[in-house]
Image 1 (cartoon, rainbow over the protein chains, first blue to last red):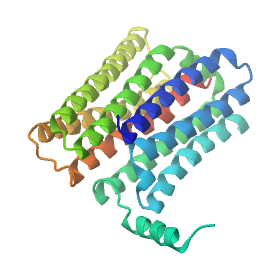
Image 2: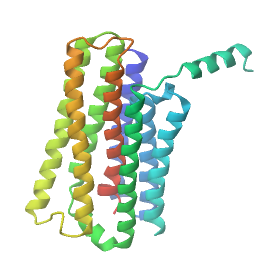
Image 3: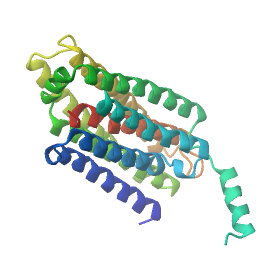
Length: 86
Length: 199
């Protein structure tokens, strides 16, 4: 198994685990703000994994990588802030 | 301490860094991501303005269906990434099989989504029921159309891979299609908690 294959497979397992974890959190976490914070963090980790490993932007020009990573941080962050603060 | 040699190597590596796929495809991906961001932020604002309506609407959805859709798209994206790795190693056949597996996983998403639509419509909910269902059907169906387009692209990539049309060192067309597919996955990763988790 090549390094790339192992990395992609590990990423796939992490993405699946975080999906199941965020669904379980709806039952386990009573506080809405805590739930939103947890879900936003899982989305950021999942987004970063897709951008770096699946899209392969880890080795791409740094501007493009930063642009996509900013998207997976800023958009869920704004959504989370709106849901908590408004 | 970092040596001059490693700094030079890092700079050279950075200078040689290439965007996977076509530049135009990445501009298209950025535009698509911007459109979806506007939808998501609009949805969050509407949810804050009408919490009862959105809470009741989300309670009528099927979280397990949302979870199946998420796992299906993640798995499909994984198969496409693996297909790209096989292509770099010159194994066209294996790449083709993995693209078929990606299409099967995408079909699981489609079947689940249409099942959920039929359940909701059967229960009397549609686009005109209220603002929640308008946004829910519009945003998820808009995403679904991207999945369908992505599946057509994956089908073409399979055809080309099976013919051995992609070279191990130069397969920009494959990378463009794969990047589009990962974008579809990325959008769903954000859509899933907004629609199914947070309420």
